[in-house]
Length: 89
Image (cartoon, rainbow, N blue to C red; front, side, top):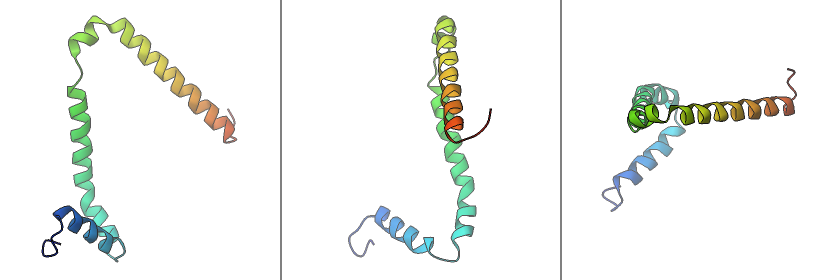
């Protein structure tokens, strides 16, 4: 793609398209899994570093109330979805 004046990203995209239809697709996915895991871990660690411990310690009742409210809302949504899908209690 460089010879055509295109970017490296375009070359990677075209290579991905070419390899997605090949017999090596599963091997490529297996080889890339450790990188995916590392990047996912890096993402969640960096989000966790954004938490302010002093704020959590100073406002723990409000944080706990929000945590319980979100958990209850999530459980209710899951129960409704399960009932709509036809699952028994």
